[in-house]
Length: 389
Image (cartoon, rainbow, N blue to C red; front, top):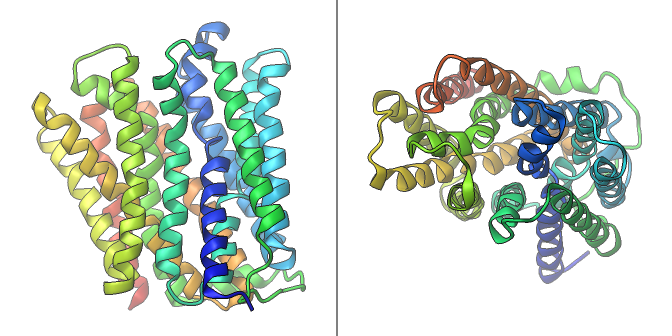
């Protein structure tokens, strides 16, 4: 059995690989303005985001139905998923550019990201029987930083082309897959489930603690990706500007990236006060930020960045703790399936939220409609409490 040092080393590799692999997630969003111009299209950000989310939903559903991460070596699943996701991302720059190719390959990127994000959490749970909340805090923090990274690329190189962004993120994903696939063996607490059981998901749905944790996670997911997707537009709206520019890209990176730090801090706090308290406090706090935006859409220019940084901190810190509660609610041999299933449904909600917000954007400005994301935290907290009882 690996020593504590080996577990820590494995976590460092998984966290690094998670960051590198999930840099693929919003790469299309950063490239969207140039692609929009080349194709003469509009609304590409919401469509590209939704394509990835739809792919991720389909992928997590397939991975869950097949119990892929429980039946096969999760490290190998991570490696091959990263390879396929990077390849699909790269093909956008190689094949003739069209709306169909962009959305199709971004869908496939999302599909194979299902073998990176939830499978990474599954690998971590195989190494940490205790302290899982802290481990997942670092892991989801890496996802957040990976999501923000393409915006940093844009800041560092104003003239960097959309193709270069996709090339760089594809290369990073390949390195991340290799780190886990070659250097992270199966964890000491992994229990293989070699049986293909179509009745497993209905059985899992009967577990009250799983339903409770999932309800909280669903409320969190209603707001998270919509907040991220529309964040650049919210920043421009609050600052009364019409172009993203370098400074607004830097702000977008900082507001998303700070959520990675809060995930790690929340993981540390979970060891002191428990995952449930951290998750519910964060979910309630991000909901309050939405209410503040509803009540005070005209935020003072000096308060815009501090307010959005606070929202960026609170909107992510609950994610790893709800995932911890999901993992702890089922037997070890079912953790991979439970995590991917909950991810699948949660990301399904992001599609509805993003497209509904895109519809509202035809009639309202971002500062007028994004506050209504508070619906997610309210229903998430209520659902968590109801199912727990």
